[in-house]
Image (cartoon, rainbow, N blue to C red; front, side, top):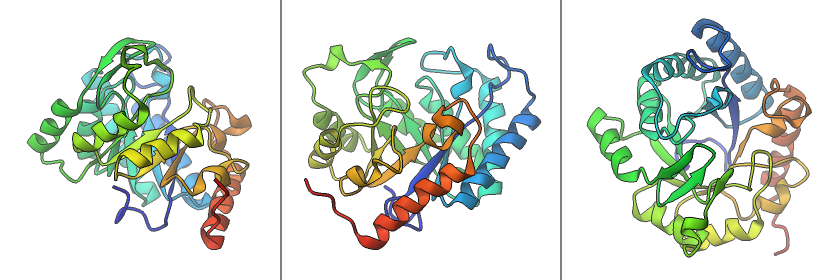
Length: 274
């Protein structure tokens, strides 16, 4: 859930794409340097008005399928702890691709608040291959390590993936399965990084479950009003970066622009026509 976690209604969660971690093909920096850069972006986000943060290992491409090594877990825990200390906001973590158990371990060690999990229910075919449901293993691991306070935000019909094997299962039914399998929130995204979802998909997810539905890609100051009524929060990465490209540095002016747009919607209680 998002209630009791964020100070503001319909929170904005800024994404920190951590530099390539040790042992990955593009790695050039040590853990201390990565943590310093991530903490610097955390400060920009905080001062720009976001409500929370998400740490993600997106520069680790190509991603391992379903798990990562101890070197990534250890490094990301250090980085995430530095982000949490600097931001003084709710912070979560996602580890690509589908390394949800490892993300839970990082969250617990770093004192984080939530993880973003892909393939929490059902399965899909990603760039890395077949990624299968992780809910049972993930929640048992969470209980085993005493991390029950870490919430699970689960993607449905995840971006950058083929869903042909679950073509007979609707997005709404997938959202219902997340609730049945004790997830804490549903994440709906477009087809790729930086692409917005369809408003109809957001409403479908909302109509099939009682969980918060967060938007996981493609939100900008220009389109946020279109989604504001239907969504319960916004996870934003690409828009906040220089030129709107995910791999670039965070640009504070962009953070402020979107934060101001959402603040205005909160103040006015805007409800766009259906």
